[in-house]
Image (cartoon, rainbow over all chains, first blue to last red; front, side):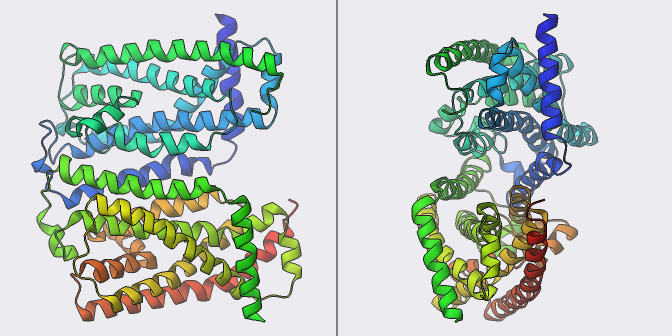
Length: 269
Length: 270
């Protein structure tokens, strides 16, 4: 276990040195999500907010509702970027060296996602918390619920990142990742518009994204004062997703290594 | 001479696109337009159940939110595609190693950039047509089509987008970075240029910033030409504002581009 954690830490430090050597990275990590958040917030001004069908959303807490969406998305978005960056290991030939070492593959992927999840989301997290605390009179928090959901949230974001990293051990063509996971996640995971009011077909698409479940749980415990028992279905779904993501990652790691041994190719496709 | 450069640029760029054009760029931009439209559709029909705020109609001159948002997203697609290609022209030459030989050739930059712009305009019209069809499906309706106003809006938009592209190109060449600069401008424009909501909802600072970018006026002109809601006098005034700001962008953009080129050549290996 100590060795596993050592690899996780080493990979996290490596990723930090790779991507945080230039301050412009904070523009993509904070300014872009901030602009998107503000655009969504001001686009609400065109509507009569009190007319919404969702009972716990009103003119007072809609800012927090939206902020929670963008804050949560910044965690999941950062791991998409992490996977994109990880594919560069293949392009630059360093993946070969990782595979030649005795480092645990899962630990490498976890270190990469860990660095990304926490470092890339920290600015947005602080900003989000400031918004939440400055509007604390408009929220209805269930403290125990929040603690459990936050724990699930962090595990899910981390494992989503680990899983995406594992998928891109297989290929160097990662551009489509953004096309599939960036904007659709913003729309279908309920970041701007709650999934409760989605038409049936859009609800089915939303089920693909792990962010959908955990964001819904987070909003329920923070805005609606929901107890864990009242959102037990969502919690079970989150636990199930965690098990599926971890299993899928472990299987992918084995399959990819077998494939690489067979083809002898760690650099190209 | 200038016409020759223009024709040569169009021919060269067309061949490059035919052979190595990254189709993912085109698909990505159309998808962005689709997601913007779809997000607006979800908000309007499902989240807020078609209940607009009291101020919306007064500020925009229309009560058709979907057409308002879709025209905005189509214009956004147009400006993004233009800026993406025209601004990055010299950066692409730098990456491909052809900037040095290009600079050795005795040609006028205006013709070179116009050539790129013309070709891009043709391509973008095709992409916008696809996005418009998607828009019609989500509720785009033309209420008061005025062909003269439409013509003025198109010409002024192209003129202004050319100016914005030049300025963006300067920043790209100077910083030698496209990813951060272009995406910061695009997300910023989406916020301050009235793409899906009237800029009057923004705080004063952001509203002023929006006024400084000619895209805001161009979007308003296009909406007026297709959806109505703007009087003749106001249309003329907005058109004049767009013309002036577009001219300022071009007047500053061209000499700045020369400076940026010089710097890029000096730092070519560094």
